[in-house]
Image 1: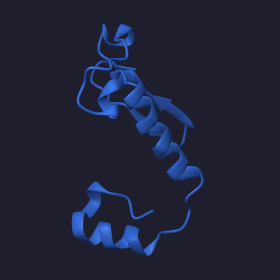
Image 2: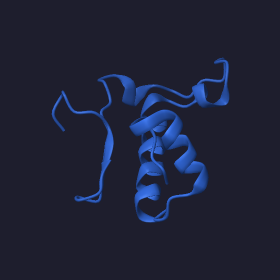
Image 3: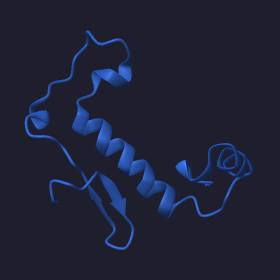
Image 4: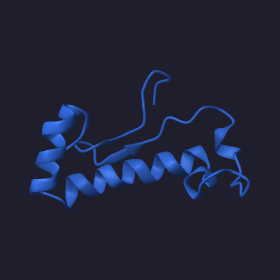
Length: 81
């Protein structure tokens, strides 16, 4: 990946790309953060986030009524799936 690219799932390539800053790969899990999600290292949160996009693309093929409602409320920032 180039330095200016962001993390993402690329359906045409069937690939997940992670944009992780130097040093974040060695970030340990921590138990002293406010929530369970914050316990995860940055790279792990990015990987799970992009894996959900891959799942959405491959498995969820129909738009749901709730997804349509969210899309109407929030526009293109959310998927209607």
